[in-house]
Length: 317
Image: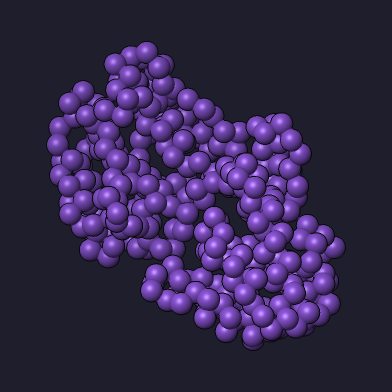
């Protein structure tokens, strides 16, 4: 079972709890997907269920074999149904039923809910009722990259386990070792130092996509080019999801804001200083806020006209 270096501190605390038999009935891991929170959950569950060790999976016992084959009868994963993005109330009700059942191995029952923010309102309320009256020897493990999207009452009933991103230098070093090549600070910044996202970013050639997008963006907002077709092509026709590319542009504007305020000499994003020299801080701030709202709109409704919304946003510069 692979152990990521940025998990070390959190894992040592979890391991200590297992060794002391301090098992919380509800846990919430808070981490971006690029920090591999599921890998840490898998390690914890394997350690909890192992028949030969109190904290680390031995890899040889029957429980470890079942977990490895994803067929342990006391471990349940709650995932969206096919072609669905949310977790339904029916799925959570089923999880609540599992929580009341007896363990087939005479130990703990574990219910894992990755990206728990995908629960709809009814599902969240159904889970809350179970967390308020937890059954014995049952552990709920939730994960999320945005705890604010969970009900405050759910958060309050879970033991919080935040996983911090490694430093930019540490992330670059890890990815560099994995790929046997140098990693630019620009890649780390655009991927917010999430090592797995950085690795995929480089392997899939996304830095080239970003540079092309940035060039088209600069030509429109600084050079006054009224034809936005090149930028729209970069956005819509690219293999990279639109929301990812909008996140890149948002980060470019954040970097430019820092340059405009004179709070950094960082040149990670080469065009940030140019943007800061051309636009005042207020404009950069307002456009970054508007882009964040636009990105949120597109994530909620797939029927919106991306090109029209983006064009309107660009002309505000």
